[in-house]
Length: 518
Image 1: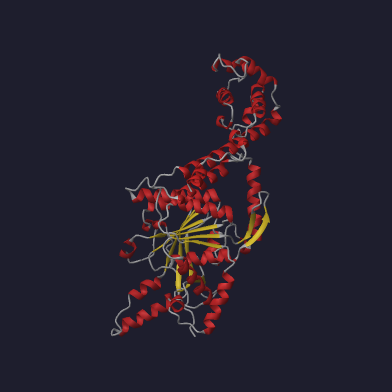
Image 2: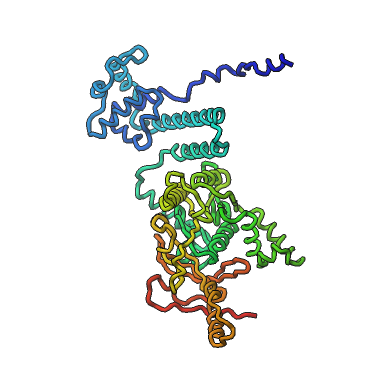
């Protein structure tokens, strides 16, 4: 038995000893050819300077030569073997040749200025590969020597962050672009909008009047959906998310293997408050028109169950992904969103809700600064993934102290950062909710009759107030709301308000006619 234990502890020789002596990927010839081109014609530097940095070179002496040449050229001076040698160590020995000889050799073996960019991209790509190897080694070392308080999930999230950061930086298409290219992009966007349902440039919400005002949910936008408890924030976000997923149509395959979205989109829903089961029940209730409380307590008949089954089957293949993990940090949320984008695609991200997220930990003593950190990083995530991010937010209690309960931008909790970072701010308001709270005693027949009459005007109605919008006007959109099944819908044509009243207008708001009840 001891012999077996000893054999088990004996280190095994690697299957391939050459794996231990592999050198990182690099190309000395490409580095020399590029540096030579720069020393011969300084214009070659500007063909690579927007994406290539000294750290991307493998040889330290090449890093120093590129850095020094860049300093000279940016100052308007000539960078050549004669001017550079004064600022490099004179006693430098490079494989048996002096510094002067090496600089002269670089100039003699240079590539042409036409090929300089191709050489620069090769040097850059090999540097990215070396970074990828380093990340892999760090993952291995961290896994072997992890401290006691470190969790595997934190290691995975950190590795994903580094990999995604490397994937986004491993490109050379940033910087200035010709206006013609921007025009082409704008025309392509218009063409896609023309082909998409509703002729919208953004994702359609399924709410016609809201889409008309906003042009859909725009890529790279941070959209804040706010309201007091009971107004239906989560219901509206769920309705929009479901519609986007339901209308998803795959498009053409891009050169990188990813598939474009022709209509609708893949939805990621972070439900920090409700469980995934509660969210699914809401969607089932919305689609079957069976109240969720009736589903929960089993008050359904066979016909209802058949409808629930049919809807559940139809919902199974929706590109709708739910993460119900509570207490997430904004960094963890970003990492999971990147992973979903990479694995399945992502066209809309919903966060329910903002105040349940945790910041990066740098501002634990100030909730206002922490919310600022959260909204700033959510906006950065929307730009990074090029998708709309719909984040729900609570409102402060000062709404309840006013006679007119309609929310304003100043009602947002920690409103400075939320209002500043958001591209669009939407408020959900239901007068019906407050009307029920003002119910008088039935003994006072006059007041009770007046209350009933007013209730007919607000019954089943909701307002979405566009408090801020970078791309269009502010104002109010009227919707229908069925509280029993938590469903927002378009008002019938006969119920819609004839005129659209912008915020701040002195015109009286018209009241939609009540629905005719069976």
